[in-house]
Length: 425
Image 1 (cartoon, helix red, strand yellow):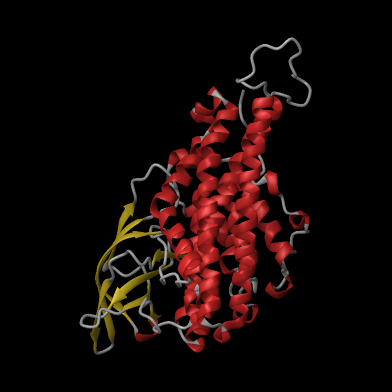
Image 2: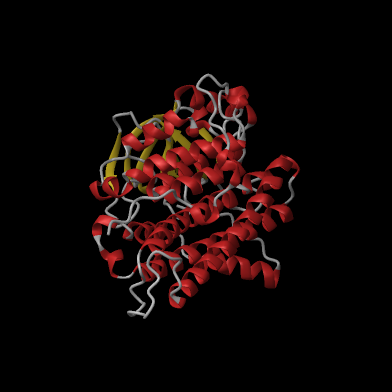
């Protein structure tokens, strides 16, 4: 029996995904949230048809990034007046989750791109952010790299015309296929970490190749070396300092924004596997069921063990999804307040995002492990590729331990302590 690729995220379909696809000549401001979700659904359906084969081949995701570019999804968050899609983060998160359900690695590529390309608004002044976004939209850049707090910063040495960037970044997302990299660097002497935009086409930049991981094989992630790479003053977007008062509360929203990208990735992968095994469960008698007097072939599945397992997994997914939705709503309100946001409001949003990320990570690990039990022995067959959901989830959650998020939530709950500003890998 072959488990055919199915439409991802089936257990929690959004009715809005049935909206019509925008016409080819539609201008960006004519494309609404429902349209973007439908575009993401069509892309996900396309990715699902050969997801297993592409994942097992493990080639650089050049074609996958080209598909994202052709769909118009890369510039989704850029304001329409700057040449982009004019959508908000609520829409972007729905898109990441839909794509991750079909192909976890591509969902990770897209989520990282959204966060990194939005960072100019968090860390640069309005004028510089506008210039960056106009250039980004005009060039249809795919953004890679990383500004994780745990990443040792590169060194940024001042020169007469700007800076030279040197060092080695241990891990970055999409570094093998990016048009622009956003990296963490520091000026010698002060050590203040800065967000720096880099053109990877410069000969002083050496891509260390894709990381040797068992999951997210198409995320083009890995290390990158920098040898006297020139950087202009405009390419230094701003400070990433975690010192008290160094960042505005609005800039502090960068952390929960990134945390919720992680949460949507986890939920998407979990829902993608649930959609796959549900199709299997409707078509084949459970391997847990012995040979009953009245087997249910041709009728609705009635194995009580299977029904209980699916019920538990559905509850787990629903609960994590509801918490993520609550966190996204809070973040959306915070972003709308802009520079009027205060420290306490930022902390509340950060705590809620940490809780959502922890719940989504735990749900994804549970679902991608236990859902295979419902399939039974056929789940181990390589041709079905069901293991990719578990491998993508586990590779991701190893980089973002749940324990750190739980400590932040507990410290705020018990002591009212604001979470430290930290950016995920």
